[in-house]
Image (cartoon, rainbow, N blue to C red; front, side):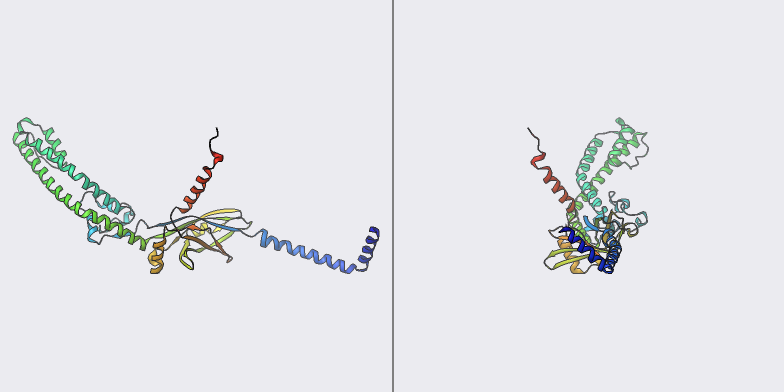
Length: 351
């Protein structure tokens, strides 16, 4: 029976040779065309995955915080030796150090100035007490039984910049003792007034500074988003410089943050089977619509999530993982998973 089937097939093939040849041609053509297409559109295509690993919000160090409010002016008083021009502007570039001391660097200088004033306030009572002790000791001195060395030590305790004059005579030492007592009393009087001023103004200045920083951050802060781009394909891919971070704050409710790729010339291309770490930054929040700015400030650090969207040069859109709209959320999620794994019974010490 099997032999009969083969004979029938042979007869059919001889009778339809042209059809067989045509089928062979079609099959060969399909293979010749299909393999390059499959290789081009599947095997050799880029396959991009995007993962956000950090969202940060900051204010540039060279942005200025005006000290226009009366409560904040104490931070800009040059007479206070703790608040030198160098301190007020130490985080700025040299070209900016000539600005008026009616402004301070947002980054750290205002906090440093406030900290210096707090330290001054804390040390004033102790310094007053030290000078009172020095006054008592000076009042018990006589020019005849003291030396220039002793008087110079008192000068260092009271005012190291004070000039005592000649001390090689009794008259000179008598005059120096009187001058030291007068200087100590004057310094204590000034310190007492300064202490009253700081006690009355510092709490208001600290409260006003915190509020000013919050208001300032709502206007001048920018967002930085860092992401890992992984290309699992066998062809390189380039992403466009513009990107979008959408913050989802409820059903049908969201706010968009427009971003720009940093160092686009170096970071736009992801090699075949390669990985690229890239960062995006936004414009200052003052450029946003008022309602968007308010929404961002309200939901930053809250239980809402964000997704990054990028476009490659072929026009394909790629979305990232979901990440909490808060600083350090990605790292926290990693530590939570690591902690959960490390707590499993499998890793516990065995008896």
